[in-house]
Image 1 (tube, helix red, strand yellow):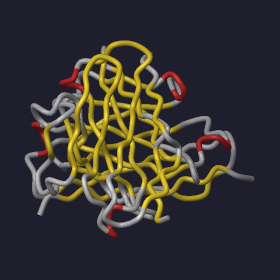
Image 2: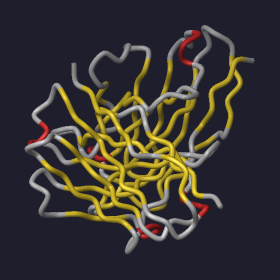
Image 3: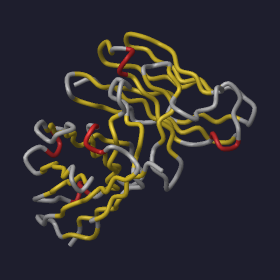
Length: 120
Length: 108
């Protein structure tokens, strides 16, 4: 079964840091672009970041640029998101998602999400 | 950045009725790069449609997508009880992805 499982969320103070992980199973992880998408409570989906299949190319949404680092370890089938200088408005469920092949940029597999709460 | 505007914000319908959801882009979008997702409360999004009109694996044929340029539509031909959920369109252009703000389909 193809599966993505996020972890690493939790409560962090403003200005703090957190590293999220996304463990992949049942797929050839190293073949796919991977993404992070977030969703604030009661709000819509916001794309955050993308990393290409070998980890050499990354891109970030303007809203979090400079405070994020996306990375991956293909040997461990794991995607990461390092988040620094966190703000209250970063409070959200963070999803990892697989970029589908030949799907025009669509995300065909999603994890269940991990909640990040930024509060003092 | 391309902005996607979905309408209506909420659609109140009964089971068996037809649902028509709109997604309008601030500039022309490649049909190849337009997708639709369904999200139920407390769950991750699920890909329904990619390339504007191709159904993802396992998606029932009551779901269909159409459109081109700046106007795209998701149609659910006959609403089943499990179809009452949130729906998002998404586009990909110049290495950036954006989502619409969503349409909620609720039971009337």
